[in-house]
Length: 142
Ligand SMILES: [Zn+2]
Image (cartoon, rainbow, N blue to C red; front, side, top):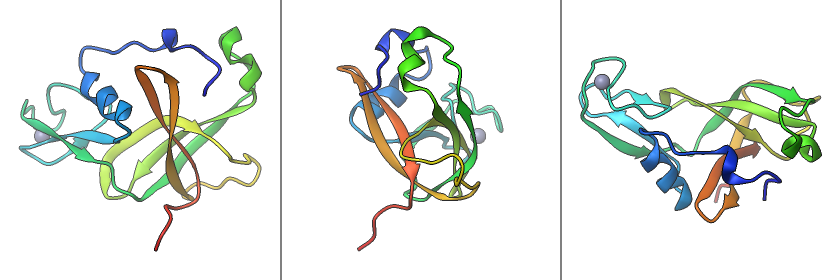
């Protein structure tokens, strides 16, 4: 469990269902029913076609590292014991509209390379918050 409390998170007016799905350990992205473009973070209006009609599609199994940084200075004392840690941007080739900021676990920043396949891991923070995080390596097969 992450060393910080859920007091650092609050649900926004548009992302309640996203966090509900995460609590059920389902990563889903809001997707426009009119033009089919997925978006993250959730928003009531499609930024492409302005439609308000949307649904939630499961994240594809394939994800990869788009970018990352190593955090070496704690922005808050609660994060100090976690240093250094990696903050990553993850992309899903099958959902080109999605780039998600997340934590990357079990990774050595010195050998990490852009584009490596990632695997989703769930990080429980509190009884009502589970974070979608990732680690290097593709999903298990067979
Ligand atoms: Zn749209």
